[in-house]
Image (tube, rainbow, N blue to C red):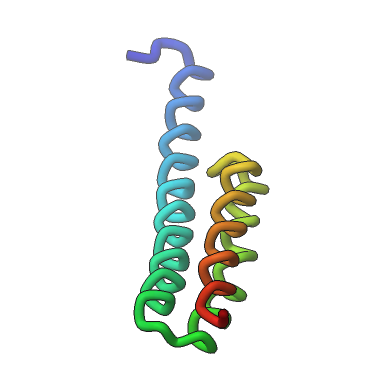
Length: 88
């Protein structure tokens, strides 16, 4: 258990940041799931629109440190490739 005042404050800050990061990660997963569902349905227009909505959300998570920037780029790239494959 934290003894010093600064350690107690650090514990409170960590708990607050954890909640924010969980919410942000959950939001990213929701956007990704919407893209994947659109891909599964085979609707090109809906999949492209869902990808356009998901891309800034994924990049924002990387900027905020919720996920690594390479991970975010990889996810966007793979989703874009799958959406592009639908048109072919």
